[in-house]
Image 1 (cartoon, rainbow, N blue to C red):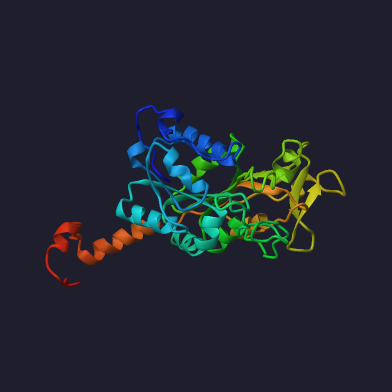
Image 2: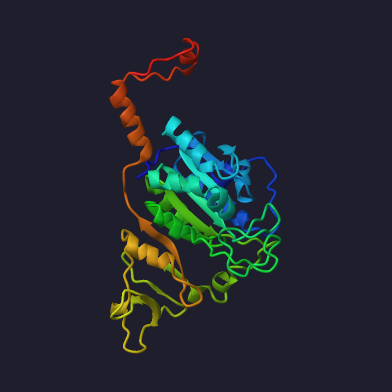
Length: 341
């Protein structure tokens, strides 16, 4: 668990920078920024220990708008920079902001490695299923048939499921939320922060200009209760406006099916109970297809495991006998060659 510390009482305004927020009016990024700024004071982390690191894309303007330290880095390489920052100063609270294009296209290889290594970085992936900054081309998460400047006749690619990707590369914490859910989203930020290790939070985010309402089939208020399932550890996977729908294992198979409690002999006892330590169950929930199933939100998977930077520094101490020097200036001025012992 990340340790809470006492600090001065801060408010959301203390985490807002003096920079003009420049996203399109109505962009889902505003809601995410608001939720982060509201959550930060509750984490008990001094601003001087907070770092926000991003790559390239609309979401990657995020560090400008946080009154903390930050880096706006290069396309797809935010995981590499974030890893370096965490290794150089493990005491820093590092958050990484990326999008479905930045994180899963050019940055897919880097994202894979920060997750599998379990570097203690909080990764927020804004998924709007489109390239917004470069004017609406299809992205790795775009659905088949998506028409865009780069796919004028419709995309023929099979899309990436961000959470399935994270689980597939052995991520130890995988969760989902929605940009406009200002109750659930901050709770996911808190859960991610409390988990020590790499955390991956996919946030469904609406691009009002190039892919408006792509998630309306499960985020619109008129259907949300029947199309969203909020998974909680140890509780039945129940959803629906009347709380009478659920997920169970189809008898005689290893498949999940959506059922209605009270119909065809189905009782609440038949409903699957969520176990966020079960990677197989998490993978099945991440892969449920619309519109046959609801979108499962919340923490899909969470496992405590050794953290990468701890192992790196332990190895340095072991090899150097605790005498490792951080005097880089002295090393560079010591001569033209160095002896590695």
